[in-house]
Amino acid sequence: MNTIVGLILLFSLSATFGIQPAPRIAVIDIQGDDGALARVLHSVAENFETVDADQVRAALRGAGHSDNPPGYMNPSLDDARALGAAVGCDYYFAGRIAVARRLGAKDEHYFEAVVALFLVEARSGRLVRFDYARVVDAQEENARIGVIKLVEERKPRYVEAVNTAAARRMESASEPPVALDAVEILDGEITSRGLTAPVFYQRLKPGYTEQAQSVELQAVVELAVVFGADAKVHDVEVLRWAGFGLDESAISTVRKLRFKPAERDGRAVSVRALVRYSFRRPPSQAEREAEAERLRRSLRNIQRPL
Image 1 (cartoon, rainbow, N blue to C red):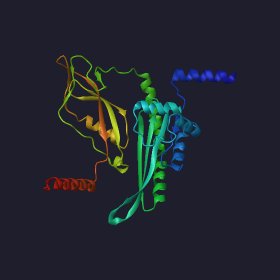
Image 2: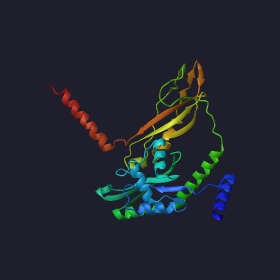
Image 3: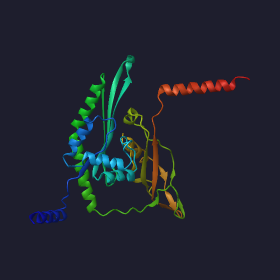
Image 4: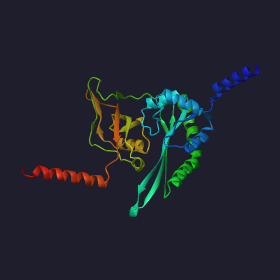
């Protein structure tokens, strides 16, 4: 009886004062990890309510990730939400650790260890925090140990990120959504009668970041952007994220766009449209020179008389 009364009292206090249970944190299988990085992240999750590792593995198998865990993620919000729902958590970590042998100056070799971590809010599918750590060392094992140590030193940041995200979620839940007076054209088609799309004055390409370069990442970032009747870019929402600074690069680029506003029946209107940027590693100088030489050979063959 006392237990029942206690539970009823706890429920009443939570409803009255907005007290929320501790967030449930899961650690998704980390690609390239021997267990050391996962242990660090589990120690972060211990500050909250941790989802059992066996439960996570079973959920991943059920979601079709048994042979191909998420690792380097580039999901839509729907995909990220689906993974969180399968695991049964509020937030989850995913990512990868990789160690590569590089050629430096004077033909000397070294090892580069990179960790990429995604902290995802399961209910919204949004990327709460992306973290990137890199260590270079002459010895492979030292590089791996060093980059994991860097992640361990950053544990307080991850705890703070979860607490901040949880607090913001509580605040947003108590605030009514703001209705945007914008025509939806997210499907890429003009369906509203009498509507003409915005006319853009230039094509801007977002920069490919050094972090993405280090792992030769190919990814797509999708944004829902409100192009205002006042010829200004307003709300920007990430619908498909990539991390590695690419989301920020895409947002920065779209905010620089200059355009003639959309019109409906001759009057300027705001529209909410999908903007998609594809990122891939640009060719190196050596690759550009090799391609140029290939073209020169092709031209010589064409010009050679029969």
